[in-house]
Length: 196
Length: 196
Image (cartoon, rainbow over all chains, first blue to last red; front, side, top):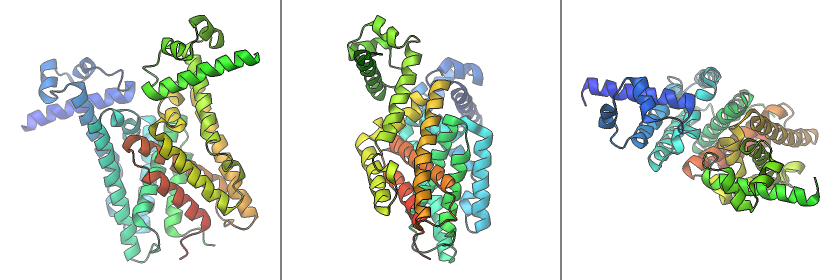
């Protein structure tokens, strides 16, 4: 794909993502995406031969990438407690700003469950996210900062679950306390706090 | 309402809930519910004057109550470690059986976000659930089994978030590991395990 082609494709995906965030998948038609991205029908089908279904998969990829990007540079370098706490604050701030229009929410309740292909993207995001947390825990264990008896992979899975649950509750109720509490319990557990 | 009236209303709500679980809210019409519950249109509107919107609120109430009932008798009596672990196993078993058709999933991604009234029901469920966990933690603290420095209310909020996230991941991927890991990390943290 040429640079120009790839920019056009990206413009279409971003327009579709924005429309879905505002109106939901069911209420998003190709015509809406065409209007919003100033793209004609033949161009839409050039980039997405399968139409809406293809486009939804591309939106799922886009939102999944944003979920990870939003947590960088912290998530990729969880090698000190300062980095862990900066990551925690970045996650809370990001979701506080984005509310129910966050990429993760859109993925979980809209585009991520539409087809086997988009479910596979959701699965891939979860794997990658969990793996980056696991690496952080394992690295801290190697440095002696986290108890070796903690199972890094299962702790990482629990961390991802707590964030997802906090975000879903935020979307359903507008209350961010559960997200904060889940992150704090996760970090307290890694820290081994409170001391008995 | 007479006993017979109340049984009819319940039959309608259960039919609507079953149809929504199988087909989603968007694809559920009053006609489907009428057919499934063997109820005529005039009867449907007798019990639910506002039509589909009223019925969705009743389904949200029904599913929210099931979420709590599914965790009993354990959730209401978390006064020993045995009770906590029996509760943990009951939650995992229940969601393993129900998969993506579990009441909590239906509430979070379908009926619980449809209207201000159903969002209020979701909020009420979360409050009640968190309160029962909080009481369990506080009781164990009073008996000396859980460290007093743990904030019972925030721990309960984190526990609820972890379960919700685990269920959402189960719905999106079919994998129950995140739910199990979230519950295990929550219980390990309450236990103060692993020891340093």
